[in-house]
Length: 131
Image (tube, rainbow, N blue to C red; front, side, top):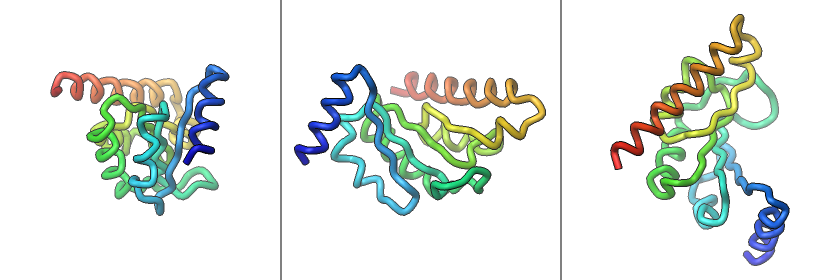
């Protein structure tokens, strides 16, 4: 689609990065044609709209597929991500995390942030060693 490519180019010319998101009901194949033209893919792990929803583990195959097909793409997950779910996200291939409720409702937000960051970093290091 030339219009989409033109929008991507305009974003890059503004020295910004391009990201595309898919909702739980959208197949990952809808994002695939654009994966080489974007900087980041966001896989929603809840239905967008409000915080505090339950993490949808059945979205992890989308993350795995993107990581396998596009190893250098930044892959972000958003929705229900916290200390109990971060390992699943990182092992599937996510290297960027959105976590709202798990951090904001924590008695120690800094430790939650550090845990999320460390789990993602360790998984990324393991992937690079496995190549």
